[in-house]
Amino acid sequence: MVRKTKEEALETRHRILDAAVEVFNRQGVARTTLNDIAQEAGVTRGAIYWHFENKVVLFDAMVERLVCPLLINCEDRNERMQADPLGFIYNALDQFIGLMLNDAKFRRVFEILWHKCEYVGEMANIRDSHLDEGENHIDVLQQAFSLAIAQGQLHSALTPHQATIGLVAVIDGLLFNWTKNPALFPLDSYASPIIRAYLNGLTRPQA
Image (cartoon, rainbow, N blue to C red; front, side, top):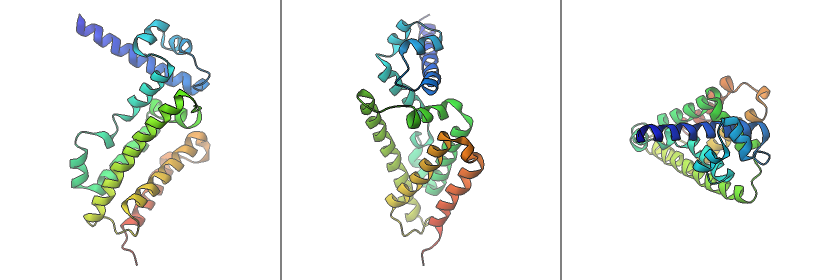
């Protein structure tokens, strides 16, 4: 019975987070109330307070649920990276772009983060905490670039940090503009060749 109760509580938590994604995406974070999310989820406001202290905590949990499963955070990350650092980078990017294309909830969370949230007050603190998480991802990519150079997979005049920042700029630029206006270009046929063109440029020996 206890196990069933825990499973039901987890199911309710996920239902609330799923509802938050939909309502935040539809109305924006500032205009959304916990009552709006409760109605969308089909639960009481009390059920939301059981899981989340307030809207800011709920928003943070919504983003955290998105980030944790990424390949860049997997348990065998270091082993994958050591074995084939350039392959690790490609696989991480393919996973990320694939989720943006094929997982509507994943994509909507980024649409909320980039286009439908005003980062003031407590929300500014949440932004800063997720900026820290983004810096962790940058650190992982930089480690992979360092290994790729050491193993002779890359022959770039750029430092590992420069190569990482360039790659992040390419990806963020593509996804920010695509989520703002999907009609601007087809992500499924543009993302991979553009990203690979950037990385291919780093694999050529410098004159």
